[in-house]
Amino acid sequence: DTAVSQTPKYLVTQMGNDKSIKCEQNLGHDTMYWYKQDSKKFLKIMFSYNNKELIINETVPNRFSPKSPDKAHLNLHINSLELGDSAVYFCASSQDIRVQSTDTQYFGPGTRLTVL
Amino acid sequence: QKEVEQNSGPLSVPEGAIASLNCTYSDRGSQSFFWYRQYSGKSPELIMFIYSNGDKEDGRFTAQLNKASQYVSLLIRDSQPSDSATYLCAVKEEKLVFGQGTRLTINP
Image (cartoon, rainbow over all chains, first blue to last red; front, side, top):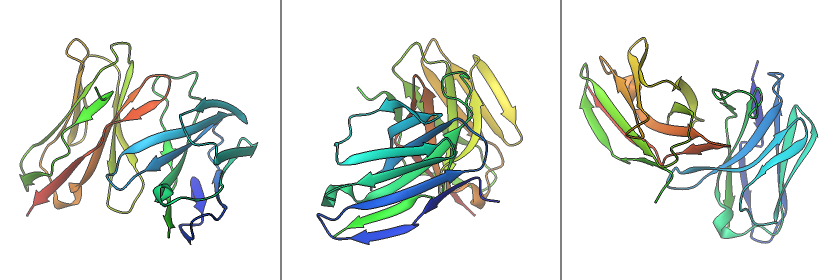
């Protein structure tokens, strides 16, 4: 059983398009995250939701909009895609970021987005 | 100043030797520290976490934390070719802040 799953695994699209990436976790965790990993492998948090509530919103263009229909799902919608959006996007989940200082995050397999 | 700094490498170590990976962080209030391993094209996976000063051992891996010096390290004993990967140091503040990673290559 896959603990944190993402779809699609690869996404190739043209500039200006709108696309979505879906994430699901079956670990029963309360907190989910979106990270962006650029070409230099730098992994940076974008958003975090705890039980469907947005708790972390980093300085991300408002073209990026997360949606959490329930605590097991966190989707990422990107409008008007730009070349600089090309990266690998990782979803992750953890028990509860607010409670445990040693809260371990589990990562999904990643979605490689290429904007042409 | 970057919040979490690692030497990006590449770090090359002969098989069977000890690989030493280092990380410094800027927030003195940080409480928890994590080491993740990421194989090329794969997602990060947790190796260890540490939150008390001193050493924590798990198999061939030892994490070392020195909060006074704001320094955390990972030692890999008896290095194997399968240990070749990028190692990410992460520090828990309100969120998890990652270093840029150190690429480690174990040479047979």
